[in-house]
Picture 1 (spheres, rainbow, N blue to C red):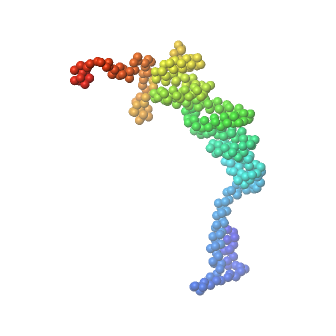
Picture 2: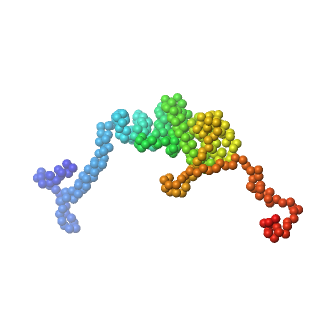
Picture 3: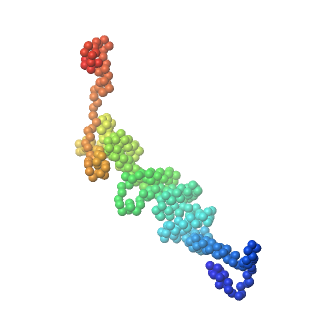
Length: 357
C-alpha cells in the first residue's frame, strides 16, 4: 500500500520520467500508457493485500518457528499450560511440516492426550487408532490402546453429568462396551504394561454396569408382563456376568418369570440356587420363601397420554396355574368327538343335526 501511495504522490513530480503516449488507431485519440497500466497496478495491489490479510493468522501463530524441535517445544509448553486447543494446532502443524521427522511419531501420540483433555473423545479415539495403524511396533503402543479405552470410558460424562446425578447403568451401554473391549485388548496384548492395573480396575466397574443395565431391561419387560423376554435377559446376566452383584437379581427375576409362566420345577430349581448363594437377598423372606411382586406395570391409555399424572399403571395379575389339568383342552375335544363305530344315533339327534343326542 505504501508503494501504491508513492505512485500517486509522484504523479505531479517533475523528476518522474516522461510517460509514453499511445494513439488508438480506431479513434485517433492519444492515451498515456501509464493510464492503461494504472488499473492493473491497483488490481494487483488489492490482490496482494488480500492474500496477506487472509494468510496472516498462520504466519503470526507460528512466527519464529522454523525447526521441528521448536514446534515440538511450543506444543509441550502449551500442553503443560493446559492450552490444549493450541497444543493440538501446533502438533498438527508439526506433522504437516515434518511428516518424517524425529518428533512426528511423538506428536501423533501426544495429540491423543491433547484431544482427550480437550473433551473431544471422538478425535482422541480416531488419533489413537491412527497411531496404532501407523506405528504397531512403537514403544508407546500400549498407551494408545489405553487412551482409546479411556476416551470411550469418559465419553458420556459431560458438563451436565457433573451437576445432575445420572445413573450410568440406565444409559446406552454402547460406549461402555467399546471401552471394555479396548481395555481387554490392552490386557491381552500387553499384560505387563504400566497401564494394565488401571485398565483392569475400570473393566470391573464397566462389567458391573453392563450387568446392571441388563437387569434394568429385564425389570422393564417384567413390569410389562413380557415374562419370556425378562427371563431371557436375566438368564443372560447369570450366564455371562458371573461375579457381579447383578447375578442375584437375575436369578430372582428368573424365579418370578417361571412362577408367572407356571413352570414350577424351574422356579424351584432357581429358588434353591438363590437360597444357597444369596440367602440375604431382598426377594427371600425370613422363612426362606420367595416374595412375589404384588404389582405389575400395566399403564392405561389415560395414564400414558397424561404422562402419568392421571390414571393408574398398576394391577395385580394372577399367577399362572401351578398344576396342569388332567386332560388338556385339545384332549377333551378329541374325547367328545370319539364315538364307538357301532353306536346308533337317535331320530331326535338326526333331526337336530347332532345338537341334541
